[in-house]
Length: 104
Image 1 (cartoon, helix red, strand yellow):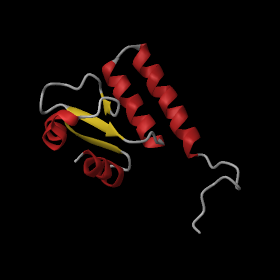
Image 2 (cartoon, rainbow, N blue to C red; image 1 turned 90 degrees about the vertical axis):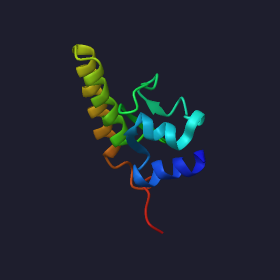
Image 3 (tube, rainbow, N blue to C red; image 1 turned 120 degrees about the horizontal axis):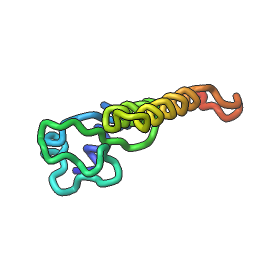
């Protein structure tokens, strides 16, 4: 069941899927991954939004920064968001040509 759900995260959410805590619990029951859910601890309210991630990606890093800006409305959250935006932009810059992925 968890393998099928993580396939959904990879394909539907491109490795970073937002959904409600209730939907996540309905899908996985007690097998909810601890490491792959933001925020932690997972909210008890079924309507609360959470994000399940499989691998970190540029959009995932930016989403984490956006979450931090809301969770910490002081300077800490803004600094986290700005660092996430910088990291996300850096991750999207092309690397050396011989290391970039190319379609065979």
